[in-house]
Length: 501
Ligand SMILES: Nc1ncnc2c1ncn2[C@@H]1O[C@H](COP(=O)(O)OP(=O)(O)OP(=O)(O)O)[C@@H](O)[C@H]1O
Image (cartoon, rainbow, N blue to C red; front, top):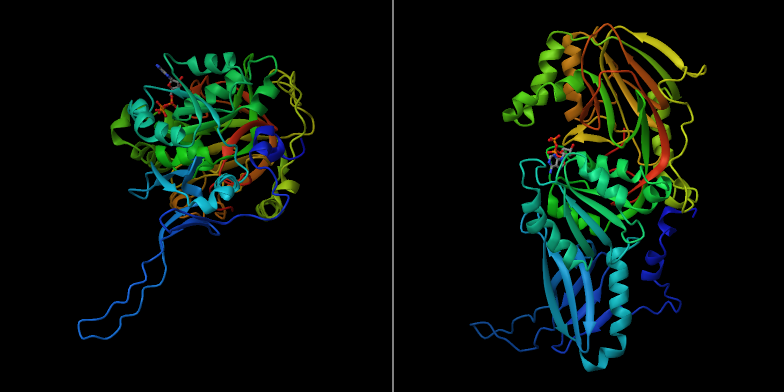
């Protein structure tokens, strides 16, 4: 199991190698049109009738060239089938740039071309799906209260038609209470499904990862099931990073075409609890601006900006002690690492070791928050901490790329810190730099890659700590990375849908 893309036997079976090298690229229809497999698209070429036409003044008019009457990008092709003399193609059209809707078109095939149909259909499916698994078996979990309570509506209108058009097997369940996602995932038959698709915000995927982690063979379950998000909540980071969109229908299309990708997950220990985090942990200005502004929800996304501005103005400080097991400290080294990881062939970059069917959750390499801090870690009192945020995915929200150097499977947690002694103007400049993508370069933004850390709040009675967007007790916690413990579907299997540092 050296290559994540060779993990699934159904994927391999779906794309039998073309041993002969003789690929049928063109199929003639009974009406004289041809269906052609182009470089990126299926091209439908109609035969123009050859009629001699003259202009009103009697001069011969140029005969129109044979031109494509339809071009369907392979990325939009959901399914192709044939029965007797008929080929049926289901594909997504885009009524707007942020929507996808399936439509179906059929062609009668010319009798002389019937011998080629099967090979042609298989070839078109192979071009449409690449390394992605066909006929995905998808367990859908809908949070009826996600976002503005529209997840069920988005599912029926935007998502289900795409899954059905792509010939996926679907089973739908709605969450009935907080934590239900954990129970559904814990009870899931992992051999019966390829994907768990959460029609929700980031809260339900968090629960699903943690539910799979409760199985006795957690490591196997997390490697077997790809967890994806269909953006139906108020925070949709997972979909932004892996599908490059917060549109439910476009995300559904990308899930259908998504390739299995290992994902780093983090173990958090706090008190006597161990949980998994897939997104981020924050403390200080970012955590407080998110969690302490719930009463300002009427402001929409602006409530976070408001929270940050007010805290920067008063130079809000959140003292703590931090201990870190650093991997890469220097920003230039981080850039080189990112480049090196993303320019080599996927087969060389991403190698996930075999996971046995009984494999449990991996042990903690550095112990828990209740153990002594490992001696090799660097420990620092951070009395001027303004913001501390650590994570493994590039985007936290649209246009908020906090971790541009993060990679799905590099075995590192990206860690960002800023201090309250930064001049206010510079702090605002850094905030603006997030939107214009120059955040990483800002000299007041400390950015490193780590494999583990511990954070101990101090000199405050209460405050905010956020794990994957949810508030957790204001108590010390410790985090360590597990390279490739989880599995997701991504567009290219290598990077997030984000420009690097
Ligand atoms: N039926 C339910 N009733 C109450 N809570 C639920 C239900 N289903 C899921 N939840 C909880 O809702 C929380 C948020 O879910 P999710 O991330 O899907 O939505 P969101 O709108 O993005 O979140 P938020 O409300 O945090 O902005 C999760 O903690 C989940 O446990």
